[in-house]
Amino acid sequence: MGGWIMWALVAVALVAARMATHQPPLATLALAALAAAAGAAVGGMMAALAVFALASIVLLSHRPRSARRRARRARERARRDRMAALREGATALVGRDAIVLEPIINRHGVGIVDIDGQVFSARALHEDDEIDAGERVEVVDVRGATALVA
Image (cartoon, rainbow, N blue to C red; front, side, top):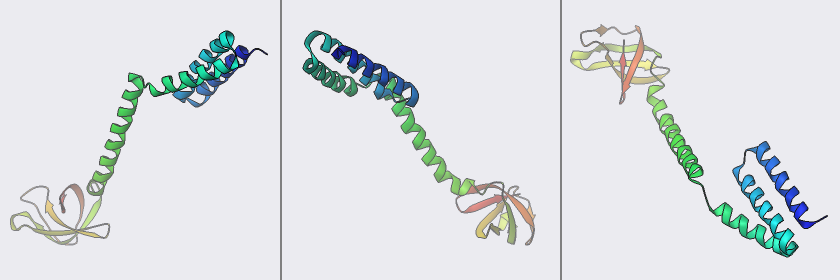
């Protein structure tokens, strides 16, 4: 079998692998294998190996703008996910039920609630509301270590 045919089959196999795995470098290696097939047709197997090695290095070191854009978007998405995980601590309490341990009176700045076994200072959603101890309330917002309840 001619050397160029072998390199052409390698290129076809790499394209098939690229389609099956969605790995962009395999398409780049397929292009290098096609270049090696041309090198084998012109100069023999040693020329084909040299062309394949050189084409692989050149093509793999060049990152197209779309690949850079994809990588940047992936980094931004990972950063947003990390930030969302940090926010989950306080915002995870929003919507949960709480039990008032000490009466909530905004004008006096007092009030304590129990949210899933954790004790928080609390303020009523409406400034003029007073909530007695023992009442069940819902957490509307969390500001610092203070739960805003209704």
